[in-house]
Image (cartoon, rainbow, N blue to C red; front, top):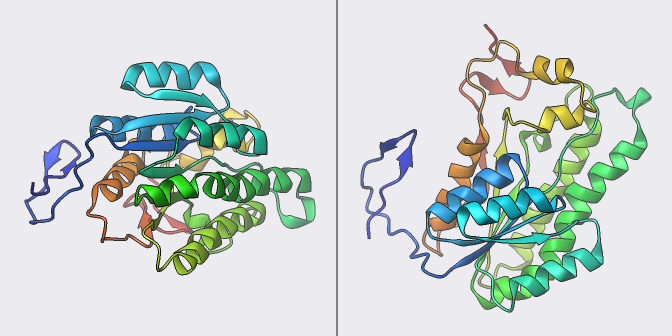
Length: 266
């Protein structure tokens, strides 16, 4: 079957690329209770994937799983026992892992930084990602699967107040890059999506401890920042590519964001 990729409600030209036949394929999406994770779960389910929605908030993922015909597994990526439960639920074969759980806390300069917040970011973005990947790798290898790491353009370069998050997302990127080298002769795809400015309902609000005014300032005047659905479309596209096609790293930003530090505001 030839590719027919829908973008913003329009069909892209047929480029002759054979899309993966999803069939009964299963995906695990971490951090699926909101934002990019929830949007990715919906996008994959619409393509025919059976999606295991993994996150800490049971009510959120149970509602999402009911909506998309998936499965909900309560999982805290910082807990070895919890992640072992996720691996058991996924079973002996898994076609796709979307490592999305993580997030940012605070935006203070280094001299004023809350290092406890840095530790939390490292535990979720880096150690949590590594823990989930380790636990699910045997099932992914058994199914000739794909791992998609959702990192950030924060891994590209430092910015004022971002050192803790820069470090965490850079660490997550290094997991993806090292694994691509380590598994070069094993049949698992290792892909990375690096979103720039994405406006979701919780990311900046969580970063600033629930301060709505500070969260809104991040996007103030920016015409059309990315949405969670935009990034989910990237996940969906990568997941459906033929197995021999590996997207090492995809950077996606709104048109208004020319670089990490250069954003057009009205």
